[in-house]
Length: 544
Image 1 (cartoon, rainbow, N blue to C red):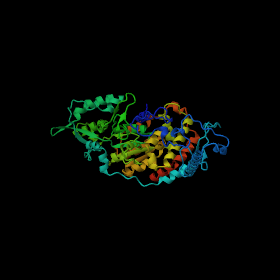
Image 2 (image 1 turned 60 degrees about the vertical axis):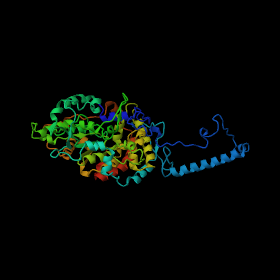
Image 3 (image 1 turned 30 degrees about the vertical axis):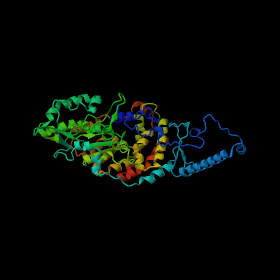
Image 4 (image 1 turned 120 degrees about the vertical axis):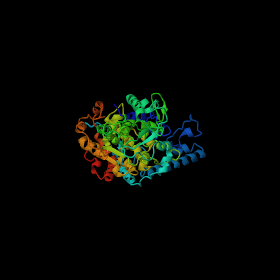
C-alpha cells in the first residue's frame, strides 16, 4: 500500500510520468508553466508568414540561382531580402557565441559533447534508436562554479509571523513546563457533547481515520480540564520531524520508532501539512477544494495530548511517564518541497523563495528535533521512478527520463542560481523524474540556517539496512528516550520491512549501467559538498 507521499505525488503528476503532460497536478499551481513549456520561448523568424502581412496562400519559389532571381524582383524586395539575410547571420552568430558559455536547451556544444553509450544492461550490444548525448563535463563544471554561494538570508521573525497570523494566534510561543512535548492549553468554546472532529478533512477523507475518530470523540470530554469556569483542551505539536527524503526508508524508520512505549502514533505518518495541505488542496475524484487549517493538523496529535493529559491529571496508572510521551510528523516532503511559496510570493517575482518550511517550524518550536535519512541519490531516483510511475516502466524509459531531466536542469542552471533551480516549481513540473530531490546538501544547508547542527540527525539508508538495531538506538538517543523493554529490542529486528519494492518493479531489474554512470557523475559534486558539511566520507557513496 502506498504511503501518503505516494498518494500526494500521484495527484500532483499524471500517470504519464515522463511525458511532460502533467495536467493532474491540482494543487492550485495552474499559474506556473507546465511540462514542455519550460525554458521555451516563441521566436519570430524572418520567414514566418504567420506574423507578416503576406497571405498564407502565397508560395515562395526558390530558383536555382540567387542572382537570376534578384534580377526579376523589385529593388525594395532585394533590399528587404538582404536585410533579412544580415539579421539571420547575426542571430546565428550570437547563438554560437552564447551557447559555448551558457548552454542552450537541447542544443549542446559539439566541442564539449561526450557520448553516453547505452546498452540493454545485459551485455547486449543493442543500442537505443535515438542517441543520447550530454555535455556532462561542462555541466559538472557549471555545478562546481555555482556550489559556493552565500547562505540564504533568514527572514525576520516578525515577517514570518506576518505571513500567517492565524497560525501564530493558535499556537503560543511558550509551552507548558514539565512536559517533554511542546504542549499548551487552549479554551474549548463549543459544547462538550459536540463532535470536535466533525469538520476535519483529515478525518473525513482518510478511511483509516474512522476508528481513530470515534475513539478520540468518545474520550474527548473526560480529557477536558475545567478551570475558572472554562473548558481547556490540551494541544500538542510533534516533538520530532522526519523530513526526508522520499524512498530513503522514512516509512520503515517511522514505524519502528513506534515500538518505543514513549512514542505515540498519530494515525497518519505523512500529513504533508507544512508543505501542501495548508495552502489548499483539490481532490481529483469529486473536484472539491479545501484548505486544511492548523486546527485540523493539531487534531492529528490528540492521542498524544490525551495521554499527556492523563499524566497531568494524575489519572494514569504509571509513574507519570505519560508526561514523557512524544509524537512525530513523518512527511517526507518537508525537507525539500517549497514550491507553494512561488505562489505566495508571485507578485514579488523572487528568484528564490523568501520563506521556507523550516522558518515556520523553527519560529513555533526552536527546540524541535529534525531527522533526515538519505541514500545514494542515483538509487533513490530509480526507486522513486519505479514507485510513483504506474505504467510503461523500463530501464530504458528511465534513462530517457533522466537525460531529459538533466538537460532541463542544465538549462535552468545556466541562467539561475543553484538554489533557484532546486526550488523552481516550474522546473519540478517539467522534469519527468524528480532529479532535484537528490541535491541533499542544498536543502540541508538551508535547514542549518535556522536549526543548530546538534538538532539535526542525518542517517544513511545503507547503514540502516545493514544494522537496524544500531541505527534505531542512535535515533532513540537523539530523541532522549529512556530505556525500552527487552521485547521491544527483539521486535525491532523481527518487524517486516515497510514499503519495499514491488515484485513487478523488481522484475524490471536495475537501472542501466550508463544511467548509473550518468547520475553518479551528476550527483558527485553535491555528494562531495555534503560529505564535507557532515565530515563523513560515507556520504560520497563511492562504494555503493
